[in-house]
Image (cartoon, rainbow, N blue to C red; front, top):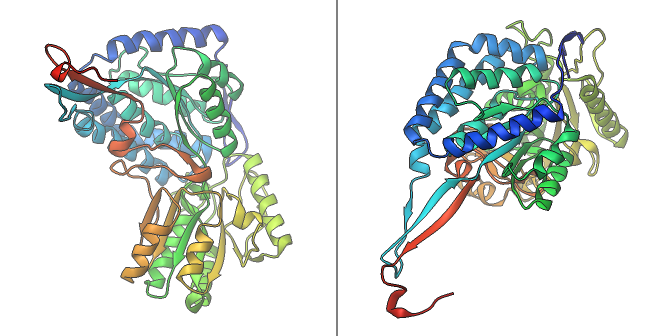
Amino acid sequence: MESRNPTTGETIRSYDEHDAAEVERRLARAFEAWTSWRRASFDERATLLGRAAELLDAEKNELGRLMTLEMGKPLRAAITEAEKCAWVCRYYAENGARFLADDHVETEAELSWVRYEPLGPVLAIMPWNFPFWQVFRFAAPTLTAGNTGLLKHASNVPGCALAIEDLLRRAGFPNGVFQTLLVGSDAVDAILQDERVRAATLTGSEGAGRAVGASAGRALKKTVLELGGSDPFVVMPSADVDAAIGTAVQARIVNNGQSCIAAKRFIVHESIFDRFLAGFVARMCALRIGDPLDEATDIGPLATEQIRDGLHAQVRASVEAGARLLTGGEPLDGPGWFYPPTVLADAPAGSPARADELFGPVATVLRARDVDEAIGLANETGFGLGAAAWTTDTDERDRFARELDAGMVFINAMVASDPRLPFGGVKRSGYGRELGRHGIREFVNVKAVSIQTGGTPDGKETE
């Protein structure tokens, strides 16, 4: 495995993949660790999560630099990512016991309740775009629930993968509770089929989700899939248009545009379309592109050359289909995998700019006659991850909240992940939820317990 700096294209370091024998050792260690970790008290687990949070805060600058060097996000965003990982650790340390407390149920029996028990080792197949946050939003609730974690990280961020394993070890988590597997995608199926692995979660592409879901299905194992998105950002006439423009730019370029919940399709009412488009293009043109280690940089490089070239092919196909190119649209010359902020307008139905996920700083702006057409355009893709709508009209707000096909709807704000709220999508954006109360209950055995002394009530047999 190679860690390459997307700003220069140079190799930072090479890593040896784990061979079959090492994978076997780590699987055995994960299962053995689970047999004792499942019995640890919530207080013990919370204490270790708190220590992990302290390390993340103390080392955020070094960890942020590692993220930036491996995948190219601006340094200040990478440092913020480390801080957010500390937040999710503290959140589950403070709330995990309450989320998994027994639920008592009134039945004919003398005592009935529901327990939430850990399943065992959980395999996490994680992407490169948020190399720490994606892992910790899995690890914090999963470890709190008493499971053990096995991380198969993206092959271009092995340094981040090993750093996370080391950080949790130094926080005091017992040997085997969280381990990194340095393996390629071709090793995932065999790991999923191993009976010691009890469940899997994946954040990644639709294709990867289909493969993991099918493999886990053959083994009858639970999965959570958080896949791609082509999030709409709707702006209606009652909105604060200037505020919407400023947020729209940030919502499109977050993480150099490489975020599943980044706004990608901007649907604007025709009465304010020209005003919005002019302001949006001007602000996109004013963004500073450059070295992500420079704090003045707004947009760094895309993570790999393949991602940049694929994005450019989508832009060209959209323009050839009839979309208007207003700015950008050509890879930058020189070293590194840079792509400029790009705005397309009036892309036709079926073109990549409307039908697919564009993973980079490319925005598609569409016009809508009314709220009905805006909702129709927002829902026209096969994705359903997040959606944002800007309006001060109460009826419009309620309609957007009800009718947008998405796992998350944000009104007058950009879509963002929050440890307190469930995160996930519908349709081709996957299934299951991370974060919040719902996320920690994804990988548990929901066990019903009913106690009746002296047999069933009234001596009746039940099925």
